[in-house]
Length: 91
Picture 1 (cartoon, rainbow, N blue to C red):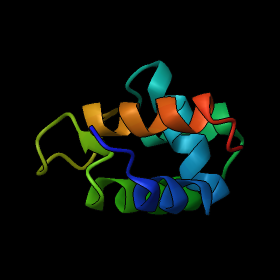
Picture 2 (tube, rainbow, N blue to C red):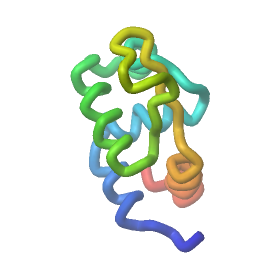
Picture 3 (tube, rainbow, N blue to C red):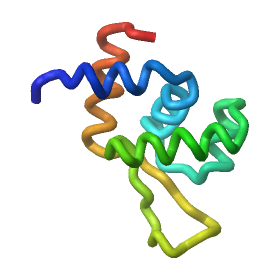
Picture 4 (cartoon, rainbow, N blue to C red):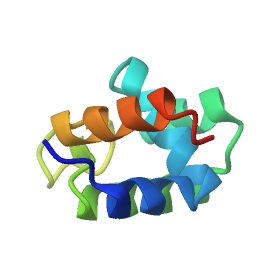
């Protein structure tokens, strides 16, 4: 896979996207747990999750119709992007 600098730049341009991706690199979690673990407001976590989902870096692991108990996880592409961010010491 060639390095996708556009995706990397997109992630690191937002503290919230970085925090959400960092948290999900450890394990899947609901937005409330991500917010608690990152000390970010739930509204920022929610926006970051939506942004990262549009870029296919995170995914909703439960049915879309589910409004409570939503669990998010990092995608393979998201994990690759995160590995590059860490390896290149871009934070």
